[in-house]
Image 1: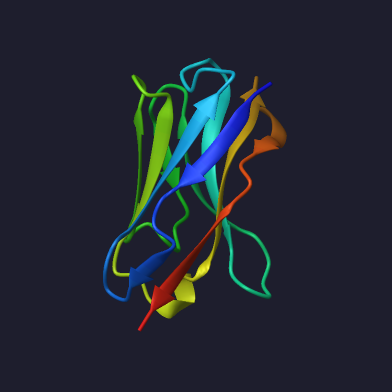
Image 2 (image 1 turned 45 degrees about the horizontal axis):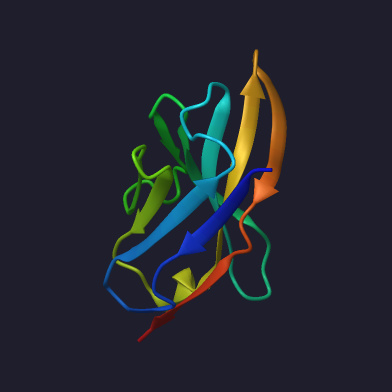
Length: 123
């Protein structure tokens, strides 16, 4: 059973960089066809897909966040990370990590999710 766990500070000051790590157990982040994504949900709003890192190490970041977002991984620890710079209170959200599956051009969705972690950006 694959499990994902987000970790990082729950409070970040405006203009600083938000850094979160997702630790994966029960499967390797380098296994073919799996992509490891970050999703967030601001209070009272819908889910926003932020980006992902592929099993190969390639990354994708949503165009709306591209200038401020970096996704990386540490294969030795089976972790992947999110960095969001120049945060504002509008970046306050519950941040989730999840596993996506893409095989032969077919997208199978995000089956496994972390529980999420609330990050509050203070003024």
